[in-house]
Length: 194
Image (tube, rainbow, N blue to C red):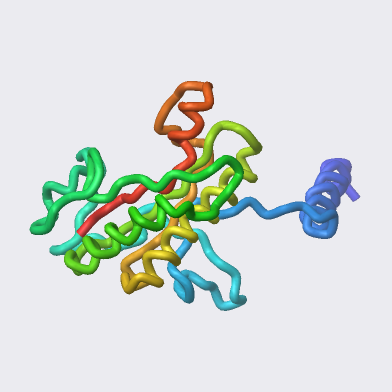
């Protein structure tokens, strides 16, 4: 056997060992940044597959809001809720994905607005403060986004109009490091499009 082929054999076995042993050692799979609504985006083996951040195809009645502020000014009719957009952010307690009474009250108003704007699609983005690992915060952000999506769906908003995405601690609203800044970063944000 030529010397060149012998050098490749240990490398190949090393790569194979890492691939085989990682799941067996209890390694956690990092959550996807965006997932489909329940029942969508599943591959044939039943695993959840990652989706693009903007999971809705663009068309005549749907366009990306990139490069624009999400003020909701392009969405006809209705009064707008919150500052800087039609739907105000939902705040969460530290290390929690549970909806507070205040969050439920705000989401009830959001549901009424969404029911009056049937052409609107929403990506619920889950965000966290800077504490914790990247993987932990991605998972927590997804739990927060799913809690908001599920509550809106329970209030009558069609689940097909709602998607979730998690940014964990990667996109802080407030770059500060004090408790007030971290409190503002623990949120669910609404990316609204038509």
